Length: 487
View 1 (cartoon, one colour):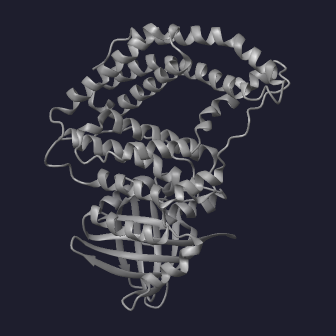
View 2 (tube, helix red, strand yellow; view 1 turned 120 degrees about the vertical axis):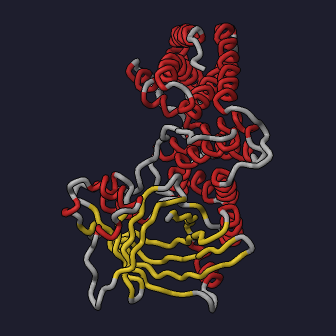
View 3 (cartoon, rainbow, N blue to C red; view 1 turned 90 degrees about the vertical axis):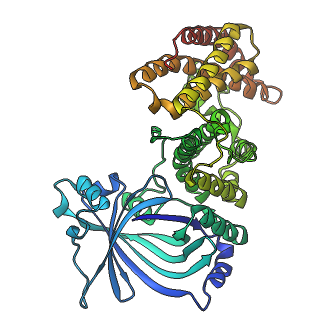
């Protein structure tokens, strides 16, 4: 069975009001106590599989969950257990012959006999079923904790699980509660939070982009929805950790990379679906800016600034960023951000529109888009030496868009040819990135000289590097432009 659910965190100030709204006369209140199992070497965690025994009031249930096609669907197999007054023993044979059971077998290998309890949950669930014209959904508020040894993590979250109807209707229901109670989306499961406690980590690991594999797209519309789903799988876990206020810098970096990829998918292939909302693009651009454009300078700390310090610069620090992590977290907790995520999730999960905005073979259409991007950049390459810095930065952005556009559709073409093309593209992208880092640094130190004359040393050193980096970026871009397209 595939489980589709939307999970949200509840702001402290809204918790009492939300509980009152949910705990009507039709609501059921139940204590849920669960034990989660894994091997000593954490094989299930590595495979993103969760296996639990849970006491639900007087009943016991054994549940196996595996990843679905995206972050809001899961493959689930649930079996009621007869306890006869005592806690039942874990029985893996109950999942045999099911898709989830097959994944469990692969994940465990020969370590099935080494399963042990690694963490537990204890929550009070308030739940009720909400009916609508196209919907039956269970809404459940969980309040309690996750325990791993002496470590504890509070749980206060609400889930909207689709029992029947459409994901669009489920999103519409959740959207009303988001607006009323200021909920913010969190796609990290209790199982992932439990593993986080086991590791003693302050947050779950940052999520990086996975290769996009378009699964037999029968239309351009279907292909675009798969691209958006892939971007959301990259974006939502990282954005959720930033919103929670305990993220590592890499979470924010990956969230911004995912936003760039999502904006590229909509910019290059967005006309493939009539269901694309024109408001998404400016909303994503605004959000990207609010998340801190200064974080594009992260590479400076790794390469350019250490070299500046080694040269003996009396001032080799960039000014503090205007936006704080708290500002970014508040932005991602805002209802406007959650509404945007929900709208994109509904789009990614919905069936393609019957009236296609663009028709034709997806591979052929993608080839035309890639060829157009390649030609545009080839023109930039010829003129690069004479461009202004802002125009060179635009060429760098175009090169990134080309790379992401290739990655979205790579599965439609011969893998080796795609890989060779990307290998030619990477040195050019790196060189343009290094030159852009220098321009960013020049601008930053230029703002300091009126109050801190020591910054003149940095500006002089950067000016000496400019000609070399400009030549390198021009040369590598020109070399790339000669590479034949694989399409």
